[in-house]
Image 1 (cartoon, helix red, strand yellow):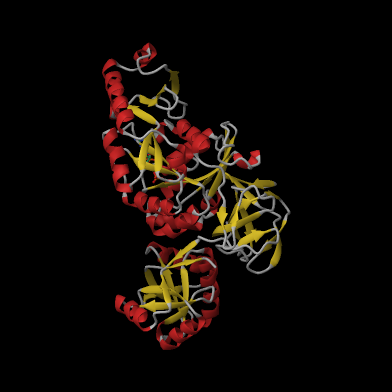
Image 2: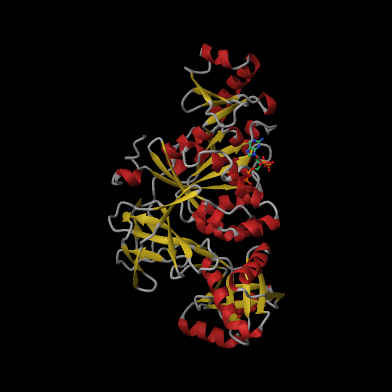
Length: 534
Ligand code: G4P
């Protein structure tokens, strides 16, 4: 195990060996396949194919709804932990569908590094770019995996150039592909000076590695056909001259990404990527809170909820809150303070997700993600501590871009409906707005598919048929500022005012003109499309 002492000299070894990361990619680039192979190498699953069910389920709308209903799968796959060569990895899943990007943004607050998967033929795609920007806002270290090298792919320099230019980040090659498409035989590992050769016949074997002493080593010629070797030598020489060398500091600051080339489906390049994560990705980083920064080595346990998911059994209102531990050594049965309510919670049945299985977490450390079953007390952004009044910052809620009004089919059931909607809002599945004037509710989402999932879940889980209809509003802004100014604003705009599920005031807009007018008439009030939880 590489000594990380130089970047985090005070970390207890259990924390120093942890790597908590997410995979970001455009749909179809190979995230599910890569996840599966990582878990396979990590020994967390026995057979390739267990994660696949999920990737496929996502493909069509009806399957997607089914998957949402069978949330067992997605709950267990939200965070997966595995051990490999002395390191403990926590892989936090980001939902693949672009309609659920808000969930993804929040997930990225819980990790210390990201693996960016790109398709070698398609390069940087839209969803990758969006997610990359979120990582950049957080200065997150990013490792790049260029996938599908077994198929026709773009020129290696062209891929690297595109990443450098479109994402404005330096790219340092950690490996270099040998041959293209059908002629792709493997990679040259620039860090360890060795060949990694792909076995097309068996998709689940580890690549054969051949240690070299430079590319002129005669052993290279024993494994690589002469024309490919000549090309490799030339390209590697050019790459070394033209491209930046790996620089750990720049990587940790998020300004340089190492790139590995591989083929997830052939398990190729996955080992190298894992080694890269172990060696270069940071151990748990400090978490920002309003009053101070919480360091992982602090002995007192702290953590924040970044995701809430309804539990497997829809008949029970149980939920699982996903907690990123920010500091300390957690033990099962601990009593922690739920800072928002001031109450003490005994964490009796925390869950650790080992791929397809859940296990009771007897023990967990800063950096780990544990699932805390609860009856709705825990919301996104909530802090759990050993007593300190902490408020973790930076967990965003975005103004929805699509709004609809929602009514219960049976008007007598309005209270039930409010309860259901509040639950979904707390889970982060939709935003709920209660207009200040009149009855009824407005729900807001980021992607249209969420409306359908919402309506279907309200009907399934609460037995409430609902009608979703267009509203006059198409935007929402949280308002803040000096108390008197906010009160004056609310008074002057009653017809536009609503309250979110936390009771915070929201200004509902119909067009840009509303925003311009509000800004002109109430210069002291800040209108914001992003709300940091609490
Ligand atoms: P995603 O989660 O990012 O959406 O991608 P996923 O892993 O589901 O992969 C998308 C498609 O790309 C799948 O094909 C998968 O098999 C294929 N794929 C993944 N890695 C590689 C690779 O290294 N090389 C090649 N050639 N293909 C790869 P599919 O046809 O949609 O599904 P399936 O029928 O193969 O399961």
